[in-house]
Structures are given as C-alpha cells and as structure tokens.
Length: 184
Length: 125
Image (cartoon, rainbow over all chains, first blue to last red; front, side, top):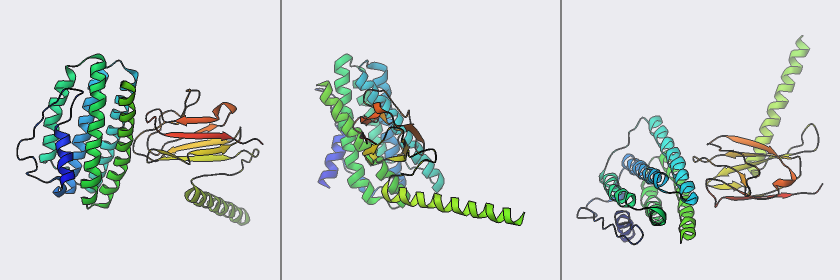
C-alpha cells in the first residue's frame, strides 16, 4: 500500500526540470483505492494515461527542434495510439465501455498543469523538462500497471492486453532514460 | 478423369502436411529454414514480440531471405544502424522479407525503439 501511495503521489507531483509543479491532490490523496478499480475503470485510466502522453508528445513536436526529442515524441504518438486502438477494439468485442473514475480525473487534471508549465519553456530547457517528465511519467504509470492493475484485472483478455502494453511502456521508460542521458 | 481428381487431392494433402510441418518448426524454434526450389538458399523468420527480435542473432548466407514479422501491438522496423537497409514500418501482423546481401552483416535496430537490437552474421559457404 505504501508503494502504491508513492506511485500515486509521483503521478501527481512530477517535476519539470528544476520547476516543482506542486500538484497536490485534492485531499485526502488516497480517499479511493486504485487497487479496487474494476476492469472497465482500469481500462479508462490506461486510455486516459495514453492520451495524456500523446498530448505531451504533440506539444514536443510543436516546440522542439531536437531530433532526439522529436523521434521520441513521434514514437509516443505511434505506440500509444496503437495501444488505445487495441484497447477500444477489445472493449468493442466484449461489448463493454470504459468507465470514468477518480484516478482518470486526477491524471487528466494534473496533466493540464504539466502542459501549461511545459508550454512556457523553450529550447534546451523544454527538451530537458519534457524528457525528465516522460521518464518520471512512464516510471510511475508502469509501477501502477505492473503492481496494482495487472494483479487485479479479472478478464483474461484485458489482462493479456495490459501485459503487452506494459512491455511497450517499459521500452518507452528505457528510451526516455537514454534521452535524458543524452540531453544532460 | 477420376485418376486426375485423386492425384490433385493427393498433391493438396501433401501441401497441407508440408505447411503444417513448417508451422510446427516455426512455432518450436522461432526460425523457419527450408531449401528454396531454385537453389540452396534458405528463408529465416524473425519474430518481433515484446519489443525484441526473436531470435536476436541470425547466421545466414548471402542470397538467403530473412522475413521479419511484427507480433506486437506497436509498430516496429528492422533497420540497419547506418540506414542502408530497412523493412519500413510494420504494424501488427505485417511482415517484410529481404534477400541477404554482404552489406547486411552487423547490428540492426528498430527505428522507433532504438534499444531493440538484432544481429546478422554471415556464414561463408
């Protein structure tokens, strides 16, 4: 539970370079437990997290001239769109609809602040902040998916999709680490 | 007429058995190797799954064919480090074949996921 609380806190307090975002959750932070979300709520969180990263990537393509950053951003758009399509296809096949919930809403509202702060940066400062945020974001989401979501997903096909997605997102985390190192 | 029909059926059954046998080989080894009717060139299969080239290393001869197939949700490529050859983007379920040339020896990677690496070694025949 401590680990989970730390992940949730990380998702809400990602920092942009030296700029603390100070994104406090509306208290209490863990009034609802992500480990108790049902499959359709978990699917909604994942879909939201994918879309947030796609938005970060579009911002990077609009603001950055760095080839490394641009290649990474294009990969984020390509991969997260592919995962979201696979998720929607599966939900369609199951005749189900993802359900909005407190965690999706928290992620979305926090991302608004991060996008505003990122959009104010330019040049190397933006590149570094984007890369650092991508690394922290993927680390936090991967922790959540691996240790909270996958063990609790009941539907076998949804679980299999999340396992495949996790492999992709761990690849992104590794890619982000490489990008952060290069931008130092 | 009846004999021709029986012969055609026998050929069809033989083909189905061969296809089935190849499938078992690919499933058990991740690698498809069979002689080409036009010579001794072989075809190799590299599966892309869980952000890995499987197998990561291949020993092939010039003139052999390598087929990359993407089993992942995310699109991938198999691309020479110097960009000299490339499968282009492969979405899930897509495959692309290349005939091996001398220049293909060495490491390759996925253009979209640069940590994904594969290696081609050339066998002297």
